Image (cartoon, rainbow, N blue to C red; front, side, top):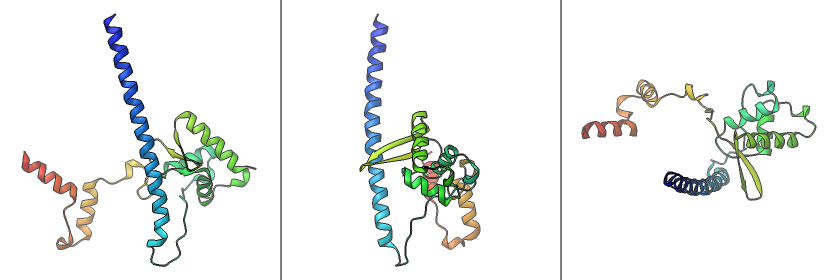
Length: 184
């Protein structure tokens, strides 16, 4: 009987810890959203006077996909929360034919609901809007899939080839490695 009581106690502690972490995650997600809004608001002010226009995420190959896979691709290429309208705009910018869906926003909302239910996408309610973000690995817009993202040493090697030695500076990773080596 003591084993069962100990297990129940441990289970209660783990559930409480999980609940605390989930509330911390919700607070962090809210803060990230506020920061994204601040960045979007400040970006035009920080520009050099040239008109700044928001451009959606453009993903190649989306035009040939079904709606659910196209939405997955858009979300995988953007680590921030997106509204259904933002996802619609990215689909359009990527060449997806929205005309094949009579009420495309309703279709997008339906797909997003199923993706949330399946656990592929997380949903955030904020400021009266619902936003969505991919839960798995992201595909870098610059480098492509995770396996194509260069390592720090590869970036350092590339920089050493294009920059003269007097302009090169040690990366923080190199400095940390040297510090750790010295301490051994």
